[in-house]
Image 1 (tube, helix red, strand yellow):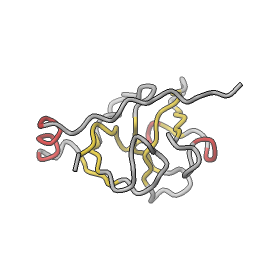
Image 2: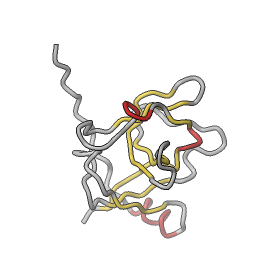
Image 3: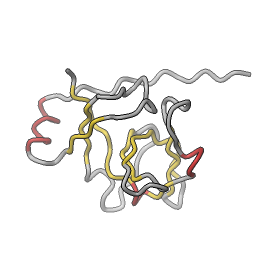
Length: 125
């Protein structure tokens, strides 16, 4: 039986509220460099990230798009989708395009403490 991936909703375009939060330094800007999140995000796309999303014990929700420290390359930030949040706070992070890049299938689960923020929106050209 072939499993067909379900279509993902598009990431919302950055509206005036998200842009204002960025100006007020409540959002950070990040440019996508790889193909691992296609078709949701493509190389060159610019996203706004909420760096406070997982502070004070907050955990990600299933299907959130997050920025995390790569567990094997701590200087590298990766953008992935949350597939599972385990009771112990470990997250299974997956690429939308599993043929490109690495994800939890290669490096295992990551702790919530490795999450740098939640991708909130995309800045449209």
